[in-house]
Image (cartoon, rainbow over all chains, first blue to last red; front, top):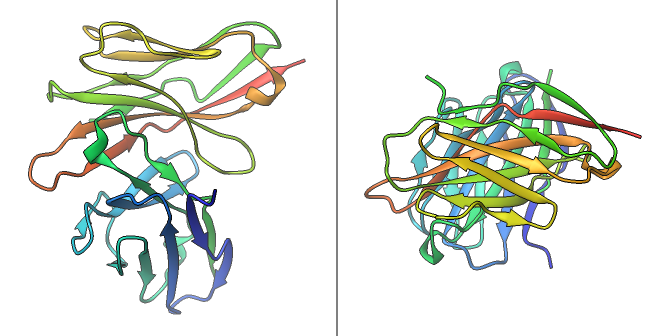
Length: 115
Length: 118
């Protein structure tokens, strides 16, 4: 009954450090997504992967890289963390092939603070 | 221009009363879907209800219903018989069909914080 699992749940970094956020889903979904949530801004798409082997930029990709390791896993990397990247990060997955009405399923989020 | 607009940053409702959370959207795509998510203080995103652009009837899921007015491009969430556990942030989101990649991205509004008063 895991759904979408994100690790870690909390992290504090210093400016300039690197970090990889991990995401795994067990629902056999083709599409996976990374969002960031900032106060008063809703969720904004960073990167997405329509299917294994493909990745594309979303609305706010600068400062991030992603890897779709396999169908289950989609990681987000901050190469050189900046205070502006302090945020809550959500991973999500969906199966668009099953229809337009399929919701995205979200992980519980990673709270990242950069000092 | 914003694709999803939620004009109410915060709302209060008395327990057991009904409440409507507003959402307007902007798209030129004839095929799209509208979703509502709930985010309690614990932080997780919970899918509530979906409305497709070609659906003839308003969507309902238990105490949640969607007042879909296509010509006005609005998709308001109605919560009937509010409960204390309904206190949360509520996000409206739109999925547009994007050609090529075959991926369905969601664009979110900024959310409405609902507080249910005992």
